[in-house]
Length: 202
Ligand code: ITT
Image (cartoon, rainbow, N blue to C red):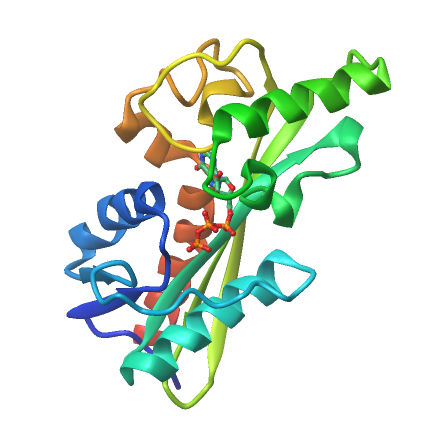
């Protein structure tokens, strides 16, 4: 039976926005989050076709490199009228170096090209834990909402300035980070992960 004891947890991500959010979620549980950025770990190529596949691939690479359990986050924006795009390609739509202003313009241009009025979208997040022996567990979360243009707010990261969660009027970019952490796709995946942690502890 696997479990995770409080202590050092490797966050297998090179995205500083995610590191901030993972710290806010995991540090209250007693974990000391050390990121792949802090450890200067190589960034693995995301060759899988699903969020779960890429999340496991990233956690596995960090667990192998450090010999410790590692936590990864594979996430993205799925736009209904674009058949779920950018999806697993959400980071790649921002080009190199990453420019999410451009990525958000691309989303708008693609919606315009479709001539659609359906701006509904979801954020999806898979949190995966991988142990040094290769065992992994994955937890998927999501939040539904719609897109609004032009982008508003600079409090989040990535596509936050265009995403309005169902029942809200402000974008994730405008929202207090604690409020976003309480409702986001990452928070939803985190809830499933903590439920699993509790189940294995009992
Ligand atoms: P790592 O693989 O190193 O973790 P990454 O940025 O490449 O970093 P992903 O491949 O999972 O991560 O890409 C997900 C992209 O989706 C990310 O770059 C964001 O732009 C976007 N995204 C994910 N969660 C988001 C959130 O909470 N708010 C805004 N955008 C988000």
